Image (cartoon, rainbow, N blue to C red; front, side, top):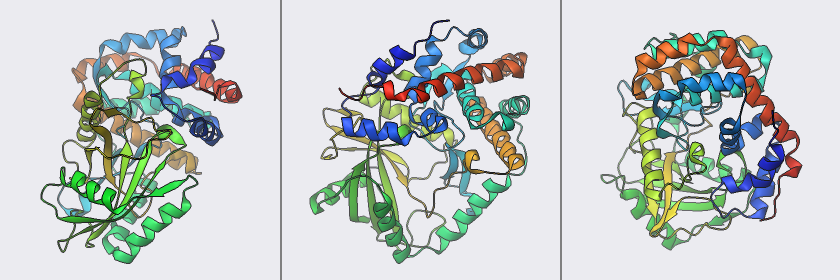
Length: 407
């Protein structure tokens, strides 16, 4: 079987939308200090390896490619977290689901999501790799069956988020805003009053019924993770009404992040238009939350974007596209890699697989036919395919010094 590692190394940065500065490339690679971080950071490489593979187990799984729908694209174990929805009662307005819409895309093979998830589980460690149970949990989701009570860490995350956000006041949001700025290891640029005025108009284009002021803001280029090379804007907002539109908060203040958008990773060799990318991310947001997503999430276009040095975001002739999301009092993610108790970690994997299966059930062209085919494959086939992908990525990570930085 040919080893294409040298080819991948030489063509590595061709998988991303230019331009990406050499500084960003270097810091991005350096931040991937283990194979799990590398797997999370460089998603297009994963799909490139998958497309090239001649592994027999992967060839077998490709029989599932006829079963298509709207996929997540990058459902790794740390891309599940808290999302705000418009729901009653109030203590149900924060849910746990896949929370990153960057790589969502329609009319794609559903099995790619499950394999991507299993690859992450495999990289974290085979001692916590009960693929047979994970497959059963995924199938239950595909069949519309839940797993019951959330794992302890998930339950604690949602409760902690609910309780703390509900008590937040102006000083807390200002502290959150300043703390985020202080902790960044990247150069930041303060936004001018003119830029803040423009961003207010941009946000009101999606929050039409809300009166607000953009109090402060800064921007930077992220240089780690799957969003490496993308620009971010962080804003401190004040709403004029007594209660801002976060159902669980009584404060008029809020921290909001605008995140640059890029091509979905599964489409690394395509030429989607900026409008198509925007629609793909919008659809993914909607589908991940069953149409109940809070108004505070959205897609905007900034015609006066200034954060362009090294930025790999999607643009068209009129400006830069951004996804908008509220920032919480803490990072609302439960990463199984950070959970030391193996029993609890396994419970999180099963719960996440069940969520993924349920999302696929809702977004598949023919969920029942896909269910029957997934059930036909044995767990060991999924495991061997995931191990193959994990080993390929580990090898690429171990040899990442061969990846050319110079444009």
